[in-house]
Image (cartoon, rainbow over all chains, first blue to last red; front, top):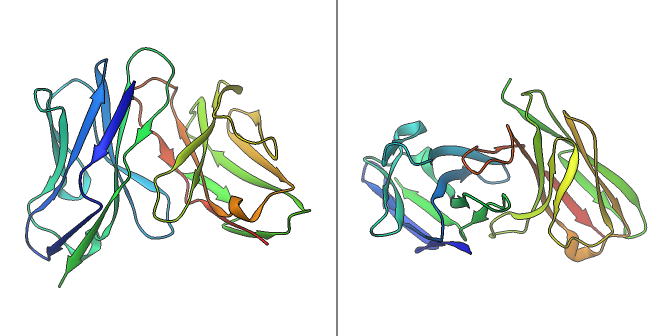
Length: 114
Length: 114
């Protein structure tokens, strides 16, 4: 079985400060992990993905994430938040072997204050 | 063209109506998906089509009927819906249903059942 836990339902930062959105996964197999962003009333956009290559993954808009197998984590970071980063962020895991069913975390709402 | 196009953007329907949602992609993807998303929740997988064949049905009620006429098109036929079916319906596509392939999402259809 696979699961993904986003530890924070809301994260609030000031513009220009670092962003950390946390994601832990549980998977019996080698996982593929994704971060998606969803702005209000919009579809989901892929930020980045991990598929067993480099453990530090760089994505769009200055975001990056590090896969840590020992901690079963895939946290999303950005050095400096921008107002336009305010959105809902989803961590997603798929596992190798078996049926392809992506499992979504509950989502983290990022709030950016001026 | 990296777009998944969904029509209509908004739909209001009565409980006795029959309506259809449409999704189109021209990226040559062979896997297409329907998701349902309630407010403040992650998307829930409904159906997966792989090479125009239904491969996953996540125990969705029969009042939702998917159809994949060709590799570029995906429809969701709606009949006798309930108010609790009101949600954002998202279509997505990916190259295949391999676990390390990312999905591209449409903007969604906001459905209201009255």
